[in-house]
Image (spheres, rainbow, N blue to C red):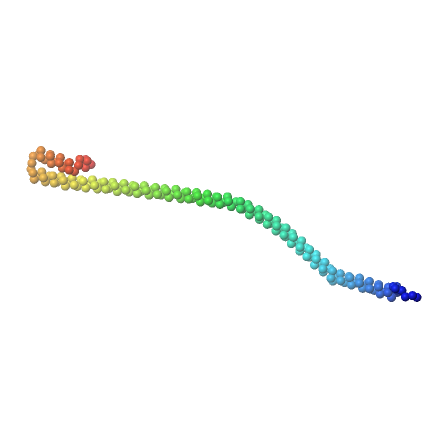
Length: 172
């Protein structure tokens, strides 16, 4: 028998069969203890990534909704600002009208008070003139008594006295 390069004898076949069974058993054990946990970990990671993508998509939609709300609010801000300014102008005009009305009332009171004071001063001046007329009349009576003169002289004294105090004063 010649030596062969590759000798297929029963021992080699038994060793090969045992090695194949050992490798297959090792593969099953490794698959159970190593590959399954790795597959589970990869599945969990894949699920987590999918959930994160879903959350990101939901957040993006929410952000788009908020963006629309804020854009609408920004549009309404100008209108609200104009309303506020309009209201402030209206209140300012009301205050202005109120102040002007109060000033007019105060001016009317001042004018009325000045008119009353002027009337009082006029009355006082008229009373002073009357007192002076009484004094002049008594002086004239004293002159008449002193002079004991006739009626022509007496009339001239009365006319002279009237001219001195003024005709308009006598009639008021």
